[in-house]
Image 1 (cartoon, rainbow, N blue to C red):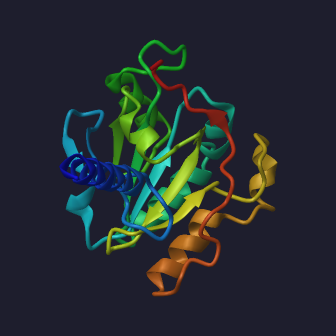
Image 2 (cartoon, rainbow, N blue to C red):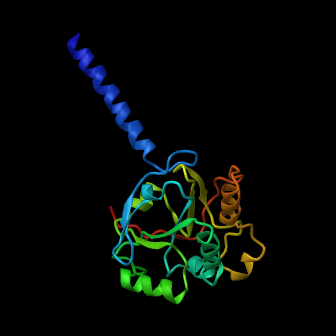
Image 3 (cartoon, rainbow, N blue to C red):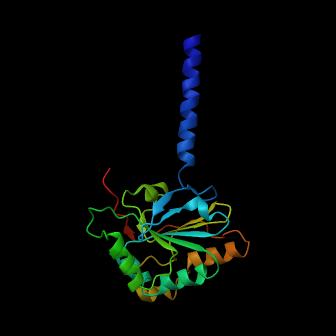
Length: 205
């Protein structure tokens, strides 16, 4: 009887542990998983420190043609528009150090300056832990978190999955649409879309 109780308790604890692990993964409509990361200047940023503000997470890789497309001015315009409205914009680079596209912090910072990027910070995630926490699959892959810390959007930057700059003009920009709705106190009407771009070059397990 005692063994049976011990077994039952172990199963219950295992279930709780599994539930906790699942809860830690980013899911639209649930609390965004917290993380801490260093930016290209070596400054530490903790997501929960921005509670009370809207936050955008943007997965990026300068070597990706889809990132090149949007950094022809589109991404910078979005960054400037919404950081000007109090939104915190965190670009995240989860490219592993061994990957051909990897840029060290100083070079990534130089790229941001060259492109006149207006992100609040560019975060280094060479281990891939943050990217995997958010199931970031592509560059770009976009996420919006509301002031209560809830993930309200995950997916593509816009509705046309191509690397052609001309397509930006005719696409619906899901990030702009979602941020305008969220800042206006409305629910995000398109809360999840399929991200497109280059695959994130994660560190081998």
